[in-house]
Image (cartoon, rainbow, N blue to C red; front, side, top):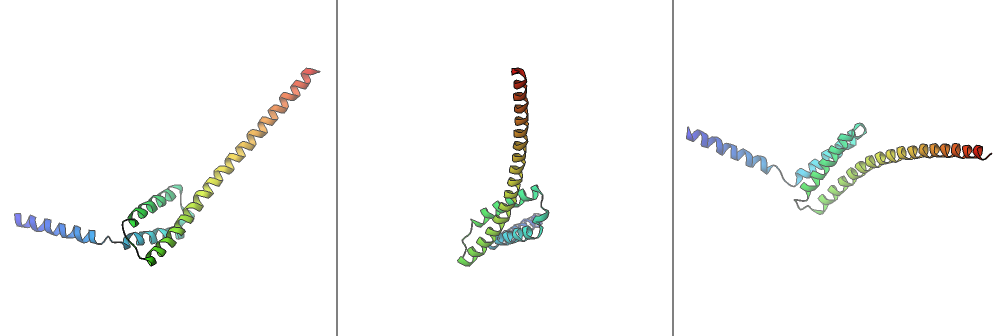
Length: 131
């Protein structure tokens, strides 16, 4: 019985080491490639939550990438993917920001119209009062 438990724990420990050894410096590159591919194929239908998740995933990959040393070719490959990803994410947030700015400008325009109408009414009333 004790021998069976010992064998089980040794087997479990070997599995953990095998799984852990699968994680190497190529893993974050592959994750970056997958995220890049996902954004290229699906970003048009992304919700705000999808964009937030993509940004969080990108930040996590950034941390993983910083744990390894890469060759010049790998760094160029990583840089190219990062550039595409950052451009897509930035474009989305810029579009969102521009939509918000447009909404605020329309509200301001309406507020200014209302102010001018009220000011004009008040001035007209003052002219009627002076007569």
